[in-house]
Amino acid sequence: MEYRILGNTGLSVSVIALGCEGFVGKTEEQVHSEMDFAISKGINFIDMYASNPDLRSNIGKALAGRRQQFIIQGHLCTTWENDQYLRTRDVEKTIASFEDQLTRLHTDYLDIGMIHYVDSEEDFHEVFNGPIIRLALRLKEEGKIRHIGLSSHNPTVARLAVESGLIEVLMFSINPCYDLQPPSENVDDLWADESYAHSLENIDPEREKLYELCEQKGIGLDVMKAYGGGDLLSETNSPFGKAMTPVQCIEYALTRPAVASVMVGCKSCDEMQAAINWCNATKEEKDYTPVMAGMEKFSWQGHCM
Image: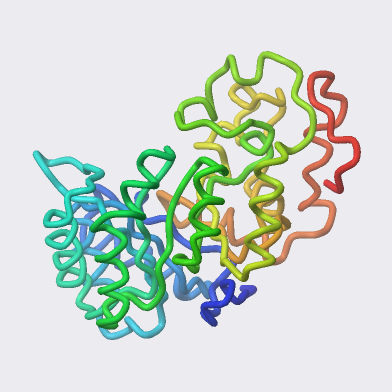
């Protein structure tokens, strides 16, 4: 396993990390077994956005006695209502869900407290000029979170967060298809067929500027949706008309500026291993450019791919 420092946090994180939604619906024993596998492969970084109480409890039990081996990125502003996940900006619900998360994970702090899913400028201003950011700062002062982060799919909003000086970590959706798209406040635009129906040239400049700004300011980037929700692994669903491998997708993400780690949503040990294979892959196996070669509607001229 390779480890990188996550921006200015000083945290050394495995480049292959776990987005824990793949553990939803599994038994305590299954979660424990798969976490054992992850640990045996050197994974030390997990993202917990899901507010599912059973998931939180099962991961807490799986980490019992080895909490210090793991860097936990937990999310603020997610709650559990009517047996489903809900994003919230209600500060009381946010506090209650945060405390529930600590209790079920058997810990008294999160390494990273991630302000969850801010994609519109209106939402950004509500969060950063209101009680949510004040709560995050208070929790950091109390030591209940060590570093403040934000998750977003919109480079314009993500840049506002970086420029605020209040976050240290950014969780952002990065893959070679999303990077072609201009900023949008509607996350569905990233995978809509019509978004790829016209000529697209090079990486969107707003995304390129965001990654470079993160590198300049020491903001650690960890990546979500590196597989494009699985579309990039399918010849049928990929906008390129060719399937990429997990190794190629991960290589693309890890070669963007400021990126330290890729959160992979794995439903099995085999899927974890497919991601971990990046660590020992050859240069040829990591090379993702053949997938884009010859695509008439895409132009990558002028950019090192």
